[in-house]
Image 1 (cartoon, rainbow, N blue to C red):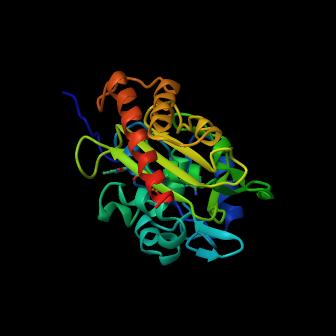
Image 2 (cartoon, protein in one colour):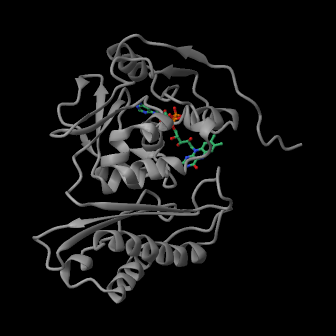
Length: 297
Ligand SMILES: Cc1cc2nc3c(=O)[nH]c(=O)nc-3n(C[C@H](O)[C@H](O)[C@H](O)COP(=O)(O)OP(=O)(O)OC[C@H]3O[C@@H](n4cnc5c(N)ncnc54)[C@H](O)[C@@H]3O)c2cc1C
């Protein structure tokens, strides 16, 4: 008999009171301990038998993890344990980082979003993470506490992912916050997610587009695109051509084709590689056109 969901195995629940204690415990139990916040990835993988950790280390109550702060000079700081519903409800996030709220809104259901976090979405390092694209185009940085204390410099998210489920984090590393700089003046963003149903499914393809006026670019604008579910890691195709000459619908088509040609997705239960490639082109064109329209309104 095949048991699709064997059930949650026994594990020890560890609730450290300091970051030092948490990092030390994790570093002393490499391969058998894992930090968690919302647990929405962790408990599913444990239940399915994919992860077999002996210890789950609850880091969501540690100092600073629940803080959500905004400063017009420094930008946005999202504590690792700030759940997605809090993020979506934040007036500052909606005013200055609407594409982040838009992306978070596509994750699962309201109920799940009371647990799920963007830090968990990032640390899970799935190529399908819906909020990761917004974090990438907004040039987020990740604050990390390790066995040697707080990292002096936060890690740029654009250099964070190493493969499916793999990141640059080392044993004992705990993400404490995700930091976002003030977005460029006049910026616009869009997240388009294609799933098998309207809500509650992972992306077959996800496209985040972001653009802003830039006097240093020949076209007068700069664009970034981040793609979900089409490469081993979240992927940013080069959108440099949209800075090189006057932007027209044909140039946007060219950029969408370039995005399609830059990815080599796989076939899986959610979609074939060919379908994914075509959807990268179509959704990139749609997302860029939407952003361009709002930039020039
Ligand atoms: C029914 C269902 C639907 C879902 N739908 C979507 C969806 O539509 N889109 C989507 O993107 N995702 C979806 N997910 C996946 C999941 O909800 C998200 O990835 C979520 O953002 C994970 O956040 P979390 O806080 O629950 O992570 P957790 O489960 O707590 O952790 C996830 C991973 O990150 C690591 N980790 C957690 N916190 C830290 C930390 N502070 N430092 C270092 N490592 C850490 C954990 O060890 C684990 O490997 C879904 C999950 C379920 C169960």
